[in-house]
Amino acid sequence: MSLETILVPCYTDNYAVLLHDDKTNKTICIDAPEARPILSALSERNWSLDTLLITHHHKDHIAGIDQIKEITGAKTYGPEAEKLQIPGLDELVKEGTPLTWSGREIDILETPGHTLGHVCYHFKEDNIIFTGDTLFALGCGRLFEGTPAQMWHSLSKLMPLPKKTKVYCGHEYTLSNAEFACKYEPNNIDLQTRILEIRAARSKNQPTIPTTIEKELLTNPFLRASSPELRENLNLANATDEEVFTEIRNRKNNE
Image (tube, rainbow, N blue to C red):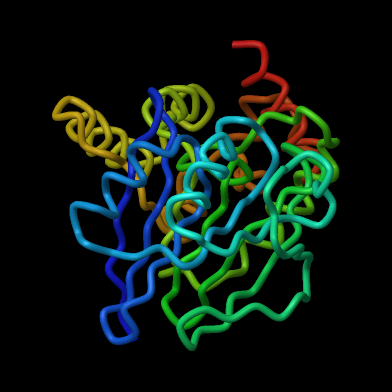
């Protein structure tokens, strides 16, 4: 089954995503940074929103919930662990919660690190995952609430997904992430090729989202703790993968 997927820019660098199933005429939205652009995208296509999924409690992912619900009546789902921080949730979810939409099963993955209750939504049949601020194109979320160990464990849940899985994340951070990555794996040919593509896209104000699990495994330093070049440049040749991840996250924090 195929879906029409619309990336909705919000604020200066946020994204919401609309998915529409022509067969059932259902539409779902992932995250609600701000209402106006999401409602405009729906109106332009004459789509009726029935479901809203929230990844985590940060304001730039939930600020539009109330207005979107008021206008569309969409049923809103979000992480049980953050129920007190996300007003307007109708249903609470956690890893293992059965969730279906338009005949599809949605797997919920708990991915703490950026926040303690962060969840990702995996549409297995369509090979799409919505990672919020856990996994970015060429990056990962800052650890505002969780620990490096928690984030590494969360990313380790995403890494084994099918390589063709499309990854939709919550922000357009890809160019700065790519420039950071090149400092530590300058000889990574896949990364060098990718940064040229990213620069070309951003010069035309085009999004770099979605990415894929395969691209991230080949180029994202936060998933490449086993890379000999990365380890050498961090002076961590004999460290554990978690220690390598922790160091690269700390260096990104201090840029």
